[in-house]
Length: 450
Image (cartoon, rainbow, N blue to C red; front, side, top):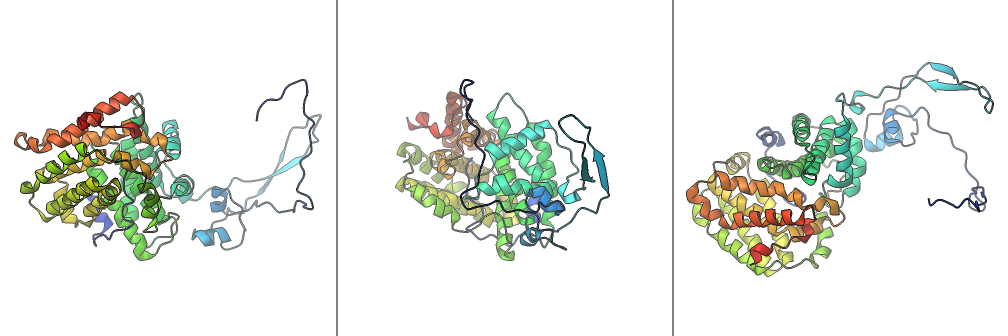
């Protein structure tokens, strides 16, 4: 599922993030005949190799990050820049270890220091198994979030380092990798692993949210965990409420970062999303009117059922996105991404009412919102053109299952209002089966178009 960079260009209300989270259910070989002459490696003309001293007594953070430490006390320059607590290994006793002698090597002594122990923040107590390693590799290569836009390198370089210091973040990354891998590979089921890591991630996330002041890396860990859990929820058949809750979490944490002017590894420029997307919008494919017109009529039919202020606001945003989509794919995209602002503009109490599964009007609105999201797939894939493997059609099944569950729990007399959205979900499921593990960039919605 594709999403907007939640919270990077819209205000949020004054609710505390804790309240929102607490209510969530949570080289080529050479021939033998002519071996090449070995040429000694040389430096460029007029250059000589400058001698340098290797860092052997660097701080623990620099050792963990595998970078050269200046070894300045009490804090090295690297830790000062990153605002990290600089700790050095204790002065260990020196041991002399003799290597066995052999004919080709003289007997020599090797000086070795006792292995330094990493501080607790760099050595999570939880033990991870081989399945976790597979899920982590899957996260790094395929499943990392594409949002906020323009931060791919942060996700695969910086966030794994922060995850060494914040255990709940590691759990969130593993949960995302497990859920995405389960969707992409039907013969592999990591759903239990995903749920275990999700629970640990949410627990640690709520504890981290209680902290008022945060150093460099802590805000990144919070935001990364929120995005990871949001994307994970989108792959879970029962994750709709978790998804909406975590969308609000992304917005709230981003707003806190803005207010506190916290330095982050993430680039959270408020205009970044549209600066990246605007050149791509000119090449968006058109959405067939035979798909849009029935959607407009179906959403309009919901108007008499609306009860609360939030129902009316969400309905208005949904209608605006569909009418804009009739004008052009560019206008439709710009209005669709603003739909998410309606979710994070809600107060805590309004949100609790809106996501109540017994709130039939809100559930009908969500079904139409999810169906619209499916129609927007040919446009939304332009948000992450490089992540081709992440667009396997099966990853859409989580959203399809949300829509199907809404149909199942909707009273019989109200189901006529869901005919259009149900047809969309049935069409998506049919095309996913026809693609047989293919890419959802190839979806055409041919069934609906006729």
